[in-house]
Image 1 (cartoon, rainbow, N blue to C red):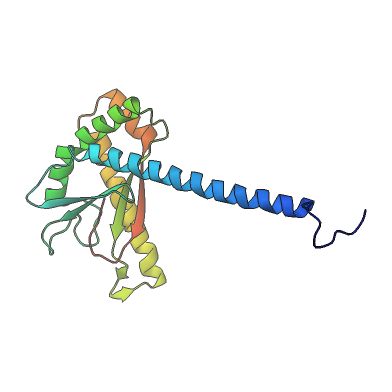
Image 2: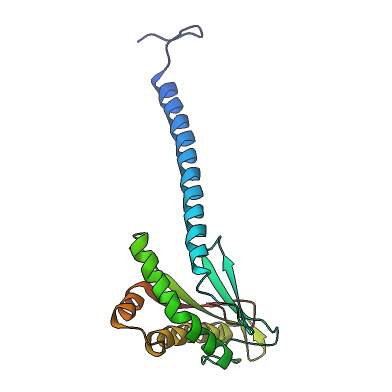
Length: 193
């Protein structure tokens, strides 16, 4: 070994590996960006196919969030609700809406599952509740009680869809394998889906 001087044209092993690392990082970033563009486009296309399922209703509004890949249901009247305060039983207007869109939602999901080979598709029913309990915001008791309430609301919608929509056995099996219900807390006093 001899010491290389400043004018030595040979590249050191370390410099060569550093160069490869920089190239690897650049290529990785380009591939990652392309992957997310494709994924976002696919998600937007998938969500847009669900638009035909969700109907315009006089009381229930739906919003499609293409970024998250979710469909959010709310009451059109700011004083209205999907679940009565503190309850896990659906309001009449919300139950009527779920009866109208529930079966088409399952059928559309089955169709997309087959057409797009979406074997890893998961439909989530999310129940939400306000973080206020007994007039207090975000205390431990309120957090636990509202988490239980939001979970119970999601489970109620799940059970209602499974038991009250007239699904055939294949549709029920699809729901059991590809749909889950979860609870969450939000700052709004409404339940969303």
